Amino acid sequence: MSFVNSVLQVAAVVRVSLGSLPERAGTAIVAMLGFAGVVLVFTGMLSIREGFENVVKRNGSPQVAMVIRGGSTSELTSGVSLDNVRVIGQAPGVAADADGPIYSPEVLVVVDAPRISTGKDSNVPFRGVTDRAFLLHDKVRVIEGRMFEPGRGEVMVGRQAAVQYGGLVVGNELRWSGFKWRVVGIFESDGGLEESEIWTDANTLQTAFERGTFFQSVYLKLSSVEAFQEFKDALSTNPQLNVEVKRHDEYLQAQTETLSLFVTVAGGVIALLMGLGAIFGSVNAMYATVSSRSVEIATLRAVGFGQVPVLISVLVESMLLGVAGGIFGGLISRIAFDGFQTSTLNWASFSQVAFQFAVTPALIAEGVFLALVLGALGGFFPAIRAARLPIAAALRGR
Image (cartoon, rainbow, N blue to C red; front, side):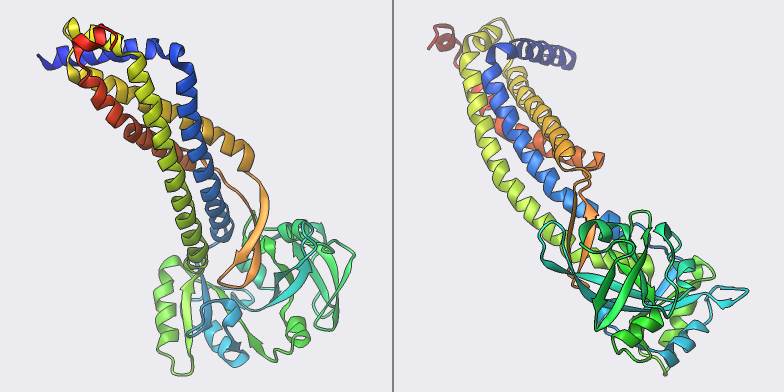
């Protein structure tokens, strides 16, 4: 048999198979729902990872460097003295403007605030910044109220923090570490990590939390992306300093790794278990399909159609049911989860990060591909059975 004839036979048998699909709607729908359930859970779980990574990495820049104490795993466990800050700020490779080098030493602590959804206290990052910080965190802008004034115990609150936690509204007064703090503004940052934080001036925060002249980190704008290595080498070879130098975007990437790994593994395990169930459901559905089409398949074989076209037709039907179920599950996931507002613990800083689930087109495509693979696995053995079906016995209805 020529290749062209083989292709024509496959097309003809697939057309016949799909044409009789409405007669087997019940078993087809059961198989589709099984695949849809797998994709729904798979995309729902991984949308947590996507949303968290979107928030954490959104505003990272390769032209912004970040310096923390050597051996520290995050800002929260770091400490950089004022003397070291001055040395760091004068290092080669740092951009400058009319007011001098562009850098900002920052203080980071964690405070308690009640979550609106549960009423229970959660850890919220409380950051002290200098006026130069807004040249580095350049997406930050006030959307309600005004900027805080240094030395007056005033704070402004990230938009996501204001949504997630009680009391963080303009005009309200809060008490942390024995100090009274007044909320004077709400800010946003293009949906970035800063929106989960509370900001005030660094010196006031140092005084309130007895940090002396120590900061947790120093942010610096580089003169160019390529200047990073020069800057890093200058600090690494300075015997006065014991620091780690990172690009801001690389630091943020590292912050997502623990949660991303956990969600990916958990989502994969759950999808695997559900996928096994979907495969068994597909196997049963396709065996039932082969049984109901036995006379039809035998007739096709009797008039000259080969085993391979029959096998392929059953596989194609199972895979199409997988794709259809995957698309349905992906759309339901998009409707149910995309944009869902929540917060989770950033295990690198032990503080809460507010974010939205993100069911992206790429994630749905991954889910549909998973359903396609499951459909192929579920249709494999029924397809072999269909191809080997005894012609005479099938025609007699046995």
